[in-house]
Image (tube, rainbow over all chains, first blue to last red; front, side):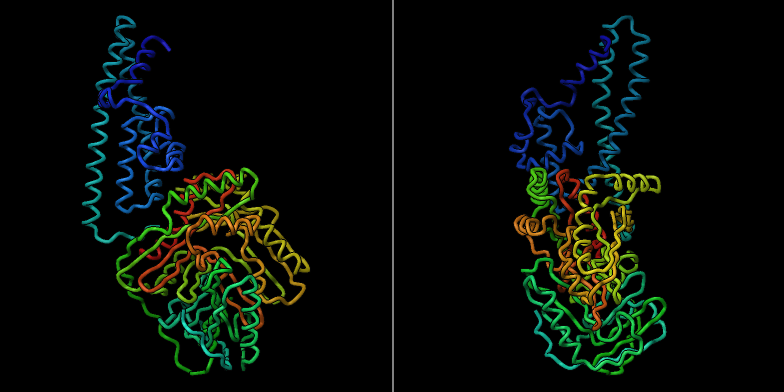
Length: 168
Length: 410
């Protein structure tokens, strides 16, 4: 990696805008995550294998605890675990493709122009990290907002359509 | 449990009839029974006789004895003389020999069709006309009411079994789970059977004593001296499109994990039949059986019996196959009893029919539901071997459950 890439790699390891406060950055392993969420390690290991619990295996944080707990709340409403996992797989597949595309766009339209126009490595590194810090929360916001709107629209469409056709 | 019908002398008459159209559409509400594939087969109604089979490892030969008594004293006029003519008993048996619930029913009327020939059998001879086919009201709103054990517990059971298999304690265990469905009105098994027959035409749609389903798996068909079985084990989803389906199919054929599941299922069937057959043919390689929502590895086993063993007794000797229990059988059964946390009822047991000559068709009851008024239990299972992952097995059972769920949802 060149100096600007090293700076980017270091920035990606955090802290990043939108990350929890210093106190919540404590990391722990899977067994501890199971403890804190009350979820079986069997299930957590399955989530890891499926790529649904993303991140390095010994560095789970409070954010992961909150995400798993949120997942549990969905289950409590009565949707079977098997159905949630199937939906999560489809969601993950779509997300992977989008994430790859987004990184591709960053490389082409942000990183490469910065390298081409920066006076030196230090300026390139600074501008690259600033771009990352600006774009990440923006991406979060756009994706979350859009998904929420899509979900609400789908629910309203379904109400308007009446009874659903048989599911294959 | 209903009281057994008193023993009586059956007066049976089978006559050829003009094509009656959709067999399942003819079923009245009165104790329907059915065994239909690709539109052909048998349907019946009324109860001329009923045998509560009871429990025990000898329940199949004992049930056959009671049928023999009943049929041998019958007066029969059979103008057609095919498998499934004359007096016929429909049966459904519990998976676990220790569990109650196995039953044989001789309907009062049977309507049959095979290869363009149709017939009508009446027991006790009242010449009432055939009921007209008519559409049925849909069921009330369906509500899912959970499973006997939480899904994560089932996943933990898969993990425990996979570890035991990896340790060499045993070779395979099939673990099943259930899904409860409730409604505001009593379920009509005829509606469910019609939908299954329409959507899964290449499966055997069956109805027997409140037990309904559409199974792809033929346990045993006997026609004269010819016997046939189609063990299935090893599954995958269907593809999202033709290319994906091709790829999924190739992967399944190449999957050593699925072969490990499949081979014991085939050899357990071949072993039982080989000792009773003069000749036996087993497909050299498994092939893909594609159904609407899943695909399976399949191997056909055919043979010629050396002795006249009734189809019900053969089905009993084959049950349980490694496709629904595991290997070794007794060890797998012990694991199932310890870990499944539920009664399988008649799921994965033999279901089908036999006539008085011992010809018959028996399937392994898969893709099915035990229906009781406005409540039903659906079932699905998966074969667990060393490489099994809990989430993958859970997903396999989800796909299998969807087949029955779609029949309940409309």
